Length: 323
Image 1 (cartoon, helix red, strand yellow):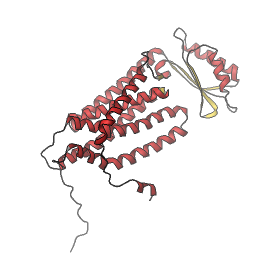
Image 2 (cartoon, helix red, strand yellow):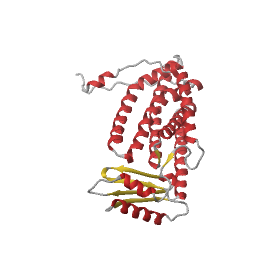
Image 3 (cartoon, rainbow, N blue to C red):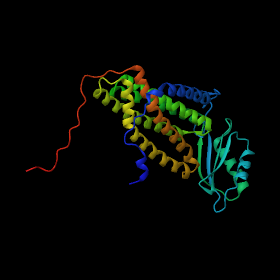
Image 4 (cartoon, rainbow, N blue to C red):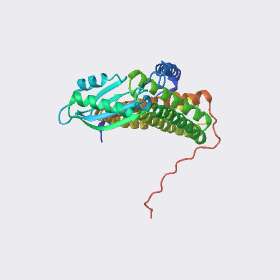
């Protein structure tokens, strides 16, 4: 057996609720800072976020100069001379490949602008082969931004309904508060680090919502079982017990996902780096919110304890028949 697994205790007895007030203050400060950084300045379409071509409108060119390496300096200079606004040049994959992102002026024809850029690149680098050309107009980018926000809001609303039907309303409110907490902090992390906000980032945030909800449901399910089992135990102790009983499962699942995403971030190239970092941050924040955001909401609201006793687990019958 892997010896590091033995470092995880089989049973823990941490007093999580004891630090709930401090965690609430810390989370509130972090959320305010994240919203301030993500929304300011109030400029369309993304405020303080580093909008990608998907939401800002523009063009992405993927090119290769094989067998020789790409001269990124000459490539950047050739595109900058065209005065296209925000221009991004970066290595992509092997040293012979590069990505060029640039905005198309509002009064210019996108197809003609792409032809000008290609001609300038060929003049600077010589033999160039363009592997991919993606053009996103301003109208399409605005529609994509609205669709991305609607997807986030709709997913959170559906989560609330699911938890409401499966548990109780206060459980649903706790889960949704935790989800908003995770989404706001993730947006703040993207804004503070300057990662590109694109459709792949929206997909990563939706994945974070799903992971956070899954972790929260595991804690809530154990909490509901313990509320039926320990009818006289104070609610604070029941919450601590439930979190401790699911802690090892949460830690192992989270670490496994983080290891996989770390490999993706290191070896996946610049295209997958941003999405991987967002997912890694979201997994850590989602685990934290399940413990220190969702569960404390149940403590503040209170919960009804049903009269039905917990169903005992029946032992399996032995396959050996005594004669």
